[in-house]
Each structure stands twice: as structure tokens, then as C-alpha cells.
Image: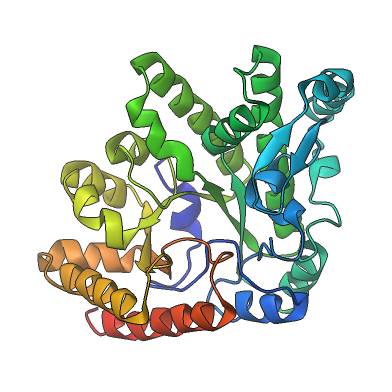
Amino acid sequence: MSASATLSAARPAPLATTGIGSLPHTQLEVGMQLALSVDVPYLPELPRREAAECFTAQALEALPGLHSEPSCRLTLDLEAWQRGSFELDARLDEADERGSVESFLPSASCEAWSPFLWEVASRRLTFAKVQCAGPATVLAAVSAGSRTSLPAPLEQQVVRLVLDRALAMARAVRAAGAVPIVFLDEPMIGAVRRASPAAQARELDLLRHAVLGLRNEGAITGLHCCGEADWAPLLRLGLDLLSFDATVSLQRLLVERPDVERFLESGGWLGLGLVPTDAKSEAERTQRLSATLAALEALPKALRTQILTQSLLTPACGLGTRSIEETERVFESLVASQARLRALL
């Protein structure tokens, strides 16, 4: 299978806009309205409504002993996990045996989930995006929350749980009538490059397994990393889409130009996180966005055209910690940037 068989069969329009995940809204209807206004509607996470909507907590919802604090920091009671782990293992085994992962769909704690599926079906959307924290990030979060090294059975259970959650969401979106675009949200994958070679290989193998499972479901499978990372191995994972903070990483990604070109030539797409989500002022956001757009415009024409033809546009990262007003300006800037880049095609 090519690096992007699913995208070669059906793909969004070049430079289509979408979002990463979290929004700052506490009113579900308002958050949904924004998440549905982009070219590729996406499932909004609303952590200010409920700590259980934090992206790592959502991915690990069924894990015994897990608690999500309002700051989105996870804590894990290892004794409670040990008491409940057998039951969760039995559920995971049953899902594997039957090929049925529906029991791992988001619960009512993800308040946008059911309304989102209803909108996907009623609007007859061609594409719909969901996201799930990836294995490297959830393992880091659980390890920090337990304040000790994780026992191997817990690590294995966490990885299985994340994959079944992502598979269940992909199947539900497809059942609602849309092609699922599933992002594995991996802000911690950058830490892998500082790990030992054995640890790096293990983390990449976990990601490769998750990517293969999702692509076998017919999902357009992406990975989002809003920090720095070792980009070359990620470009070789078999992803359909690699999403990154372009204001931080565009130039460093292009250092791996041969890998980028092979990725694009095999049908892969990029998710260009154009609009900064961590700027301290509107002036800083405007300056960084302008510099990124200028860097894209300055690329050799053939490479620039290929990148722009095979890219989605997003904010740099989630917006759950920002204000509603700032979030609205970010998406306004995204639409304006889309018009500027489309003029180059």
C-alpha cells in the first residue's frame, strides 16, 4: 500500500481548513458552531466544561484509577488500576476476538460526540475529523500521573485502549456517512528523540502499529505534533498526513527535504499549523504568521505547489487555554491565510 492510498481515493480540497481539537468554549452549541464552520468539520474538545474532556483523559477514559484534574494533569492510583485491570483486559480481549470496539466509543463525558455524529450524518459531510491522544503522549501522561515507572502490563493496556478508542471513533464517523480523518495527537513525540535508541524504536513501533490499524479501517490517518520532533522517522511511518506547527517547524522539516518529497510523491499530505496559538500578543501572532507565509511563498515553485496542493491548514495547536475572542481571531486569520495561499496555485 502506498503511503497514502486512502487519500489518493478521496481527499479534501487543497488548503482546506480544519482544527486540531480543544476549544475554550463552555457552551457546547457555540463550540460546535465554530468546529463545524471550517472546511473539514472536526470534533471539538471542551476541557473548560469538564476536566474529563482533556485530550489525554478522553483517550484513557476507561482506565481504572485514572483522575483528570481541572488543569488537565492526570493522576493514576496504581492500586485502583490493579483492582480493575483484569476487567479492562477482558473487555479489550473481547473486542479483539469479536472485532467490535464500540464499547470504547466516547461516553457522555465527551459532550460533543453524539451531536457531532448527528451533524456529520445530517449535513452529509464528505469528511469529518476526530482526534485521539497517541501512544507516546498517553504513556508519558500516565507515567507522570503515577509518579513511578509503569509496569509492563499497564503500558500494554494503555496502548491497546488508545488504539481501540481511535478505531471506534473512525468506525462511527464512517457509519455516519463520512470519510474519517483521524489525528493521533502526539505533542510528546518530540521527547522520543532525546530517549535511548531502544526507546525511540519502541515508540515508533507503537505509532506504526496504530497507524496501520487505522488505515486498515479506511481512515485517513494523521499525526499531529505541535512541538519539535525528529521529522524524518515520522515521515516514514506510513502516515496519510503529518500535521505540525509551521511557525516553529517548517524550516526544520524542510531540512529533511528528500524525505518530505518522497512523502508527498507517495501521496502523503501535510497539515500546516499556520496560525500561532501561543502568541503573547496579537502583534506577535501576526508577525509569526506573516513570516511563515513568506517562507512558503519563497519556496521553489515546484516544491511550493506540491506542498500547497497536498496540505490542510490548521491553527498551530489546540485552543483550549486561550480566550474565545482570541480563538475567533485565530480562525479568521486562518481563512485569510487560505485565500493568500490559494492565490499561489
